[in-house]
Image (cartoon, rainbow, N blue to C red; front, side, top):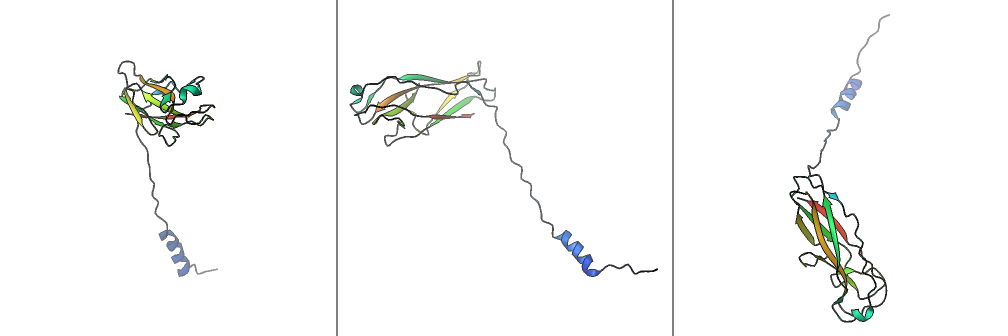
Length: 166
């Protein structure tokens, strides 16, 4: 038995056409080389302003006493020379942090150890101690009534801190 084994020209072209129409592939590789972060020791800071009296918060600019807060970071790597803290939180039309509690005409003021007010989006940079490899952010907070006439109720505010390393 003899047979003619021949290639059909259409089949031959179809095989090579499929191979020639393969798409190019692009592989993109991304990443960053960053310094190992410091260890955040103060993961949460709760400030209890205690009971404040409305009679002491009737005049514009009246405020409670200051309450100290220290945000501590430890074990900063040798290549980290400074740490920046960026503070964020809800504000009202006065620019201070908004009281989310029920007391009206009350805001929260946050200041650093140089007495500079830290409002939403502000930052503070501290140098990492070369010997201990620690960094500290001494802050203070208080309730303030910018416009006066504070009413009874609760005081609640949330201020977030985001760290960056240099």
